[in-house]
Length: 408
Image (cartoon, rainbow, N blue to C red; front, side):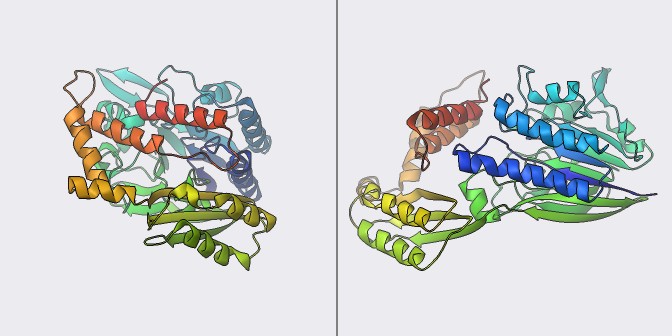
């Protein structure tokens, strides 16, 4: 007799600031639950980052609890591990509360024997055996894998699932080269299904000596770049017969996406404005997220000279659900002066200054100092979202700065 299970990861509920965008990860979470119930799954796996922070707002928790109760009422078990976002070094995490109330099971039970980490499998009613390791920021969970007693996991009989929240070096795709990762050799071998999280790009691959390794991608894209690239959220449903697994990717997107990518090289702010207006004038945007990415170098004027207010007003008059812009790679002529005077790019100049500024420190390596400095520069270059108050903007920047610094 076979069984069926759903695999979800990286819901990042609470990641978006604007109330309209904040609603969409919740809608996708609720839809994933509905589909899981409709498909009669035996259990659901959540491989980390259910929430975007360890202590999310009560409004978000209430919605999530309602969804988990719907699964509970149908006799569907939920196994969840903490990810790098919903894990807290202080030990305070909403997942512990959800486990105490019986809504989820955290299959990370372990003990230490002779300096070795010994994981315990939880046997589900379906017969599947489930265990896992939590995810932590900056690959701090690597220490758990270094201590892990793999032999017991590898020799265990039955259908085995290993849950984890980390990138795997050998499986990193283009665009994820800089993401810190574990070598695949750190995973225990001979598991039938590796339920991964953390990597925001779907992947399903069978690896000899290991088993099927699956990254679901985000249940809803967590930022502009992801939304532009993926255009949808996703999770997986798996049918198991014996040792055979049929894996199906399920895509969910509550809104349409319309993207404008405009090369602004040599254009004036007015020309940029007119080009965008021409692009949207003959279209309707009902239930659509309009994404505007601008890049290149303006011939004259400043970025703020582009009449974004009118562009947004026109789009909303055409029933757009939400409009957002990204001008991170849009430059003004001022940058040309810097390039001529220094004979290097602005990015190279920033890197040079950062490298010259870092000093030896017992608590933090030079590489980590450089990584933090670059991330903070990118953070402070961010702009307010459309409709975001100054207070919310400042709060968002502070929260993201804490994540960069791994501060709790």
